Every structure is written in structure tokens, then in C-alpha cells.
Image 1 (cartoon, helix red, strand yellow):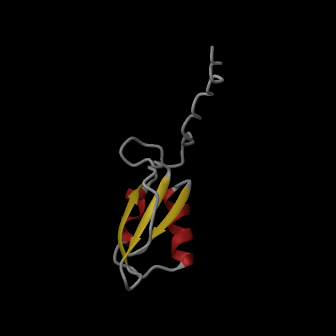
Image 2: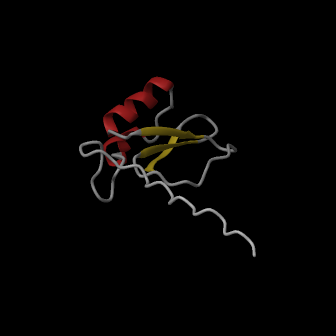
Length: 93
């Protein structure tokens, strides 16, 4: 007779978005609050301002040709750049 494998622990729960940090339904990361920055040249200072003003829990800058995880995180602000470091889109994810 073979022994049973040990029981597995349940998967951890996804992170909770704190109230007041962009947690409203369709815009959990607050991307709607910073859409006026699309078309501007990206800088580290602008990135920090985007994160702060949106209320997002995290910021991810996405440049052409870079690999990124497909993990969706509602509280994360994704800033998409083109080859010239100009912001082309700002979305949650």
C-alpha cells in the first residue's frame, strides 16, 4: 500500500485594495485620474507623480520589447511607453 501525499495548503488570497486608494469598480488603480499625461515624455519624477495622484498601490512602466508578467493586479498602474519614452497609454493591471 502506498502512502497518501500530504494535504496541500490553499492558495493565498489575492491582495486587497485599500479603500480610498483607487478602489472604485471600473478604475481600481485610479488610471482615469491621470489620463491627461498620455502623450507626455516619461521621467522617473512623472512616474512617481502618476502613482501618487492616481492612488495606485504600485506602478509598472512598460517599454517596447520588454517582457512582463501577465499577472493582473487591479491596484497596479501600468504606464505604456513608445520607443521615444512617450506615454501611449495608462491602464490598471
